[in-house]
Image 1 (tube, protein in one colour):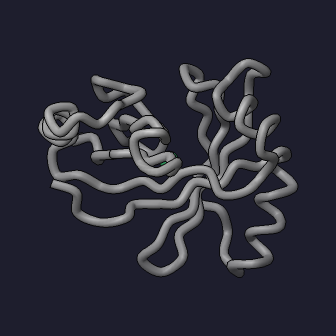
Image 2 (image 1 turned 90 degrees about the vertical axis):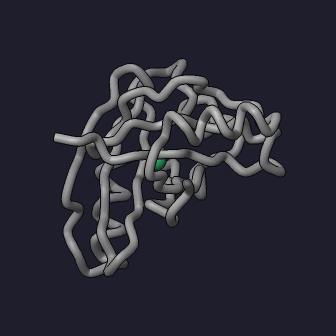
Length: 135
Ligand code: ZN
């Protein structure tokens, strides 16, 4: 089941400059910086009340984020929804005919298992499913 928006992802060209910018904007410190090698991305997370923002910078020139930045520039990138059971949610969406980028969950940042739907499956929206890894 999809439970709530877990975070919004924003693509940035220069992570340290953007961390400074968002720290000023939100008046709060970024609580985590983490690289996800498999995705070629370096992330920084902010918590604002109940909401979370993820900044994403490319760490490899051929990563999906690098291609996104090249095509569209910095700005809104994806919305992530928390699921209670990502495996069964993926299966349900496949059965409903949705095209997924990841048909099996993979390790994402911030202690999550994640899977992305293909933007063309969701009106051009890049949608991430995630589930907190159990300790
Ligand atoms: Zn995300």
